[in-house]
Amino acid sequence: MRFFLFVIGMVMIVEGLPYFAFPEKMKSWLQQMLETPEHVLRKLGFGLMMAGLVLLYFANRMV
Image (cartoon, rainbow, N blue to C red; front, side, top):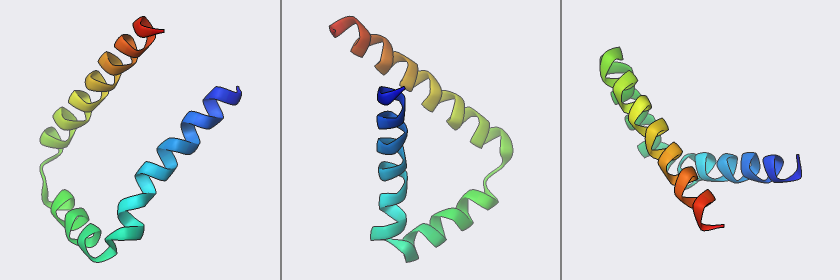
């Protein structure tokens, strides 16, 4: 549970950093995302999830 909370905390830091550092740019990126078709966002999300799984797999094999 401790490791899980650590990982969630790190994700929140990484996710929040662009909003803190570049709020005006994030607004324009979010507007572009609203205009992007849903099927493109789904493919992007799926690709990111698969890349995350691959990273976790290799990280687990290194330990």
